[in-house]
Image (cartoon, rainbow, N blue to C red):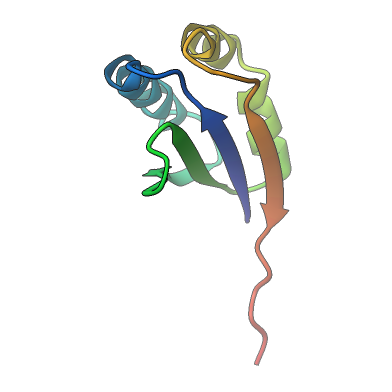
Length: 98
């Protein structure tokens, strides 16, 4: 299992449009093989800083979604509201052993 963390800085006064675009992205991701869950976090000190954390069954599942034409189109719609390019990091979940 793995986590994908996407950090986005959005333009002032675009919060409602960004929220709509993020909902569309999440809705589409729900139907992708390997997608487990996700959440959207808004920075309390800077509400224009948005962090997305999603959980995927594998890196391969994430990469397939990352390259999916629907995601590319939805992300393209979102990109017009960003101050800079999104920053994406991937992490494997370390399972606790007993």
